[in-house]
Image (cartoon, rainbow, N blue to C red; front, side, top):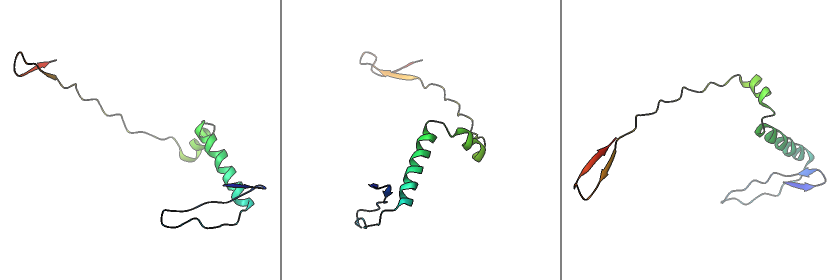
Length: 86
């Protein structure tokens, strides 16, 4: 969380422990701003070339073949049972 004067703090709390007072610092501010810059550039695709160099080409497993459609069974009062429709 930015607190002004180019300083920031990290807030960490849980349901069982309250947040602890921490001292603001410029290092945390730079870390926060750097993370935000990298995050948004990664989302819009600007870093794809860098990710490609670092991680190589990702290969996804082959898509599963779709199962054949199951026949639709309808029940009507006139025939008193089930009738298959293809």
